[in-house]
Amino acid sequence: MGLDWNPLGKPKPGMEAEFYRLLGQLGTAEAWLQPVPFRFEAVDKSQRDALRERFFAIQISPYETLNPPRVGRDAEADAWIRSKYEGAPNKPPTIDEWVRQFNGYWVMALLPESDGLPVYSNAPLGGNWERWSFRAKFLDDCEDVLGETLFSEAWLNHLPDQLADYGERLMSCARAYAKIHDVSHILTARWFSEEEAAKGDDPTSPLHKAHIIASAARWAAFWSSHGHGMNADY
Image (cartoon, rainbow, N blue to C red; front, side, top):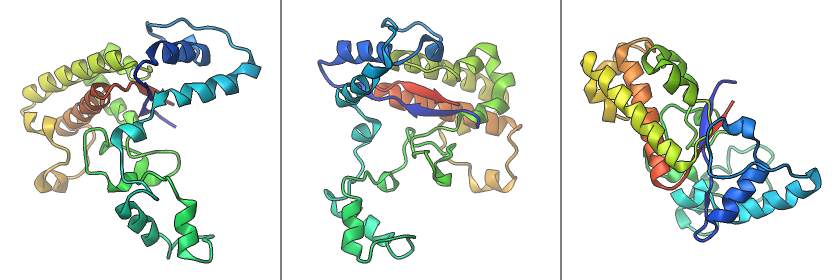
């Protein structure tokens, strides 16, 4: 399956202590593998559903942070979901019923591009991947550049301050590598130029390696600056 990064939710104002207490109860130490500001506690299975419900009730989701147009609230979202009716399988008999069944749906497709919505992503394939998902499996092509420490950390969950620090170190690595190979222009580029793209997709080239690492660093900086951590999904 590889490795994908997804932003964690963040605590609502005033809920920080409870948020991290619940995170410690619902998580496992083995899943974090790095210092965290809370204690892991054993929780009886009968309690988990109630704790999980409370945990999500006191957090701000990545959707809320991005605040894309929403069906039933924003006209552009309603227009977008209406445009999907014609080619949809197993659709209800009327378009109005179709729109109603998507009431509340966040239309991520209508968000403008940003570092928090990466180029390297499985999102276009559909399934469980959202636009914010970073396909960190691409970092396998950069292991020789990253070194053991930075590469290994890609597989760890990060709280916001940990993610900010990791992003800074990733960008420092990308800058040093790009300077050596004279590709520093790619560090801030979202896409390759037409000329670069025409040369083909060579994941072993310095241009691609610098772009992958810088994109990962910018993703980490975006989400940590908005108060979100990262869940490493593999």
